[in-house]
Image (cartoon, rainbow, N blue to C red; front, top):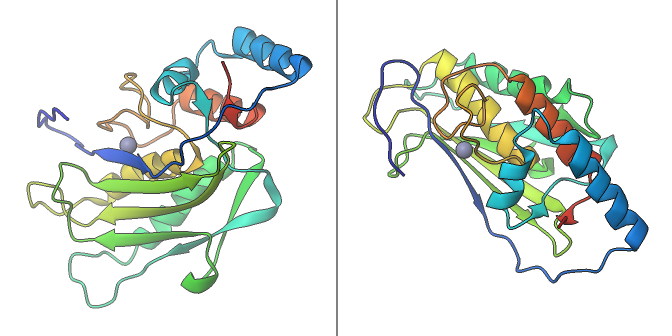
Length: 219
Ligand SMILES: [Zn+2]
């Protein structure tokens, strides 16, 4: 990954999926036609086709979790001078930002890591040039069934992350968590180097499209 250092927020994220190698399930013609029509009409203003290309034409997403929100646990390190105790709040707000899109995927927070579906932990820094990592796994049909997020306290060059940086990278990693991947659009929170702290219209449209479609190989 080429990573020129620029002034401003330099944040790297990476999604690592330990995906199973899925078999291709035939879809009923009517379902295939609906998917084709949706792709025809709703990809404008999104980076969804870029996402499909990155994922070998598979849509990876969580099953409907409106009635049963994903339980999120955010680590709050004690006695670590690099950690600012407001940061867990910023991380929780990052989930809330995506939650407000009205996706059929909702989040709640738990103080009990053993009961969490998703754990967010802090690492001092990554040896690779990145500041956040989301690892998720999916079943053979493309449904995401588990994920964890790691956030760095220091940039690869050793500088401590800033609060703005935590906010940006957390929003980026939650984007990975819900099934998004990197886009070349640098105004997006899902750019591989994040220069913004807010979701763009294309982030919102792309996420909604991911969840308007089923998981699986779409074309
Ligand atoms: Zn990333």
